[in-house]
Length: 284
Image (cartoon, rainbow, N blue to C red):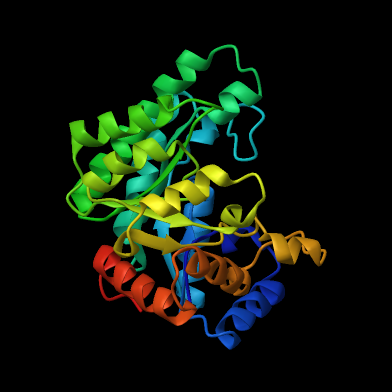
């Protein structure tokens, strides 16, 4: 089992973190990709990957750091501070031996709409600058990108903005649209550009017909699986009272995806392993 996107760094208690990792390993887990969202967590995921051999990390500047009211909002993330943020960001990437990707980074228009942000155009501009600079770093270090792209309801604006910027800047190692919940009609463009799409517990939710449609449109050789832990507990585990996701529970998502793709679960995992290797190289 491979968890291609998690936030293990959010577990502050080292004993609990070790237990979570051991449960994953005991259930057959081979790799967790721990993703940073700002420079504080970028340092944490690098520390995690140093302490635990089962963890690799990616370094990201999340688009929600600009949105007041979001969980990862940073009031220091202003246009005047962006140069300093990215100088530190690049320094972490340069000095780490464990970074395998850039992200998560991208656009988030969902929370702009949900939180009724009045200066949304200004924040979209900041997200664009940060995403563009992240893509430039991916090119500089020849690393794939992990893209957070979330649209407001009944819209594909964020996805279209992301695709336009990807075409403008280009990323030779490609990457993955993680936890993608957009319009299935955009999947063809994402795949045509050579990107992967990653699925998590959302696909098991009753109202997630759009995500199931995305999976239907995604060929096996472009599928990754993730938890986005500690978020997005699959429906069966939710019913049992689980409120926090962890990597070992990715098996529930894998079983559901395999069923929808008419595969045996082990066949899906074999394909995911090949996909991970194709995208990130021999990291397992």
